[in-house]
Image (cartoon, rainbow, N blue to C red; front, side):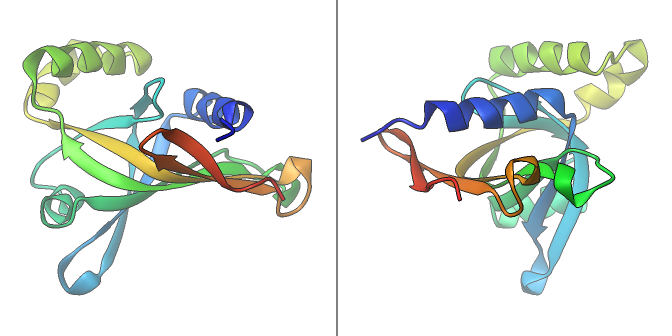
Length: 162
């Protein structure tokens, strides 16, 4: 199966350049909730963020761990729209050494100093592991997009660039 290396590089570059995701979760009675969150991403395109366990989206994720997220650039023209839409599974990061390493990276990226230490200690660290990604880039042409799906053997194109 052909590996979509170039497409994954485009997604990784966008995730590395931006700072905020919009997380969509499902609440009681199937009501959708969307919240903006600072995130960091790793080389596997997993996204990580901090949040209070009492927040609506954290409560929603406790009941339904599948979620959707989007990351996109702030632009002034439709010709500049570029972003990713993702679906996947959310879990809390609980292993202390892994949590510590991710928190160091998170605090470094967002220049969080001593003021946030208490808030960070009181927050849960979440990970979003996408299994579907749709990348959109109108600079390459109106409606330009491709879709990737995570299979057991890795990422594959489910819809070539169009």
